[in-house]
Amino acid sequence: MSMIKQEIVRSAAKLFSINGFAATSIQDIADDCRIAKGSVYKYFPSKEDLFSEVLEQFLNRYFDEVERIKRLPGLSPKEHFLKQLIFRFQYFMENKYILAEYNVSIRQDAKFMPQRLQTRGRLMNWYKECLLQVYGPEMEPYIWDLVFTLKALLKDFLNWAMHEREPLSIEETAAFILDRMDGISAHMVAAGKKPMLTASFFDRYIHWGRAGDQEADRPLTVGALLDRLAAEIGELPTGETERGELLELIRLLREETAKERPNGPMILALLAYLERENELKSLSAQLKNIILP
Image 1 (tube, rainbow, N blue to C red):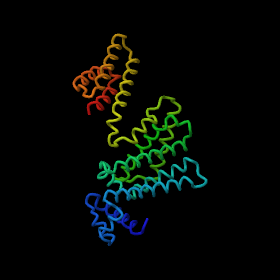
Image 2: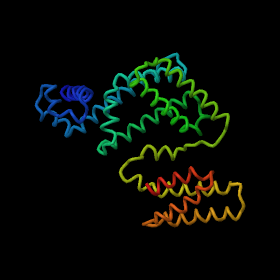
Image 3: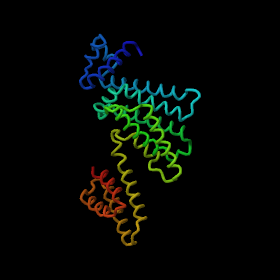
Image 4: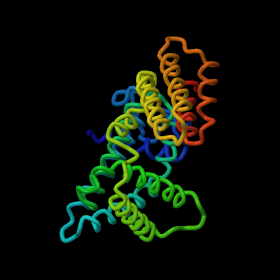
């Protein structure tokens, strides 16, 4: 990267952090670099392209460092992971203004969707790789449950560390999270229960929000929920007559949701009947949320 281009990125990162994306103009960045406005456009066709480069460099520096930490000699996989967690907190807190701008102003902008998906996938795959190294191949069936648990813990503790007045020790917080992951992973293996999340779920999550994907995936999601409802009905402690009536509702829902123009009131009536069974309420609510957003 040329020195001028790198200086533009550095200036943009600084001004986006201070003023925010919306309030920072290309002219502001050019003035800060002491170059003509046209020189900025020579390297970046738009302000969005420039922010994408800022974010890309931010993430590349992060992943370069966690890879370096992973190669430190004389440490166990868990010790490597602990150091990576500590660095994550340090790095994200040091760059909290860029992250805040991304989360508030940029995240909902469709122009940034490809980069958001790439970032999401990159982070989730990193979690997966680290957790498998720490807890071994026996965690493979439960890995996405563990990944999403780790993601939630990191997000909430990072938000606390960044925004609350009462400070947290980064080292103690990272150790606390790792201790919780130890207990959760051991319980998952010992319990031997069916995992909540699968690889196919992860694939949908990674691409969720991409233009057209939600509509394209809707029939598959509706079908999967109807299949789960039918399976739950099969396990209900009820008579065969009532079971048959509930399965008939599932059949009618399949027919109606497959139509080009489903009958909303009919779907609501069918779901309302299903929701009378406590065991079916949660799945019925999910189905309603997808079919009738």
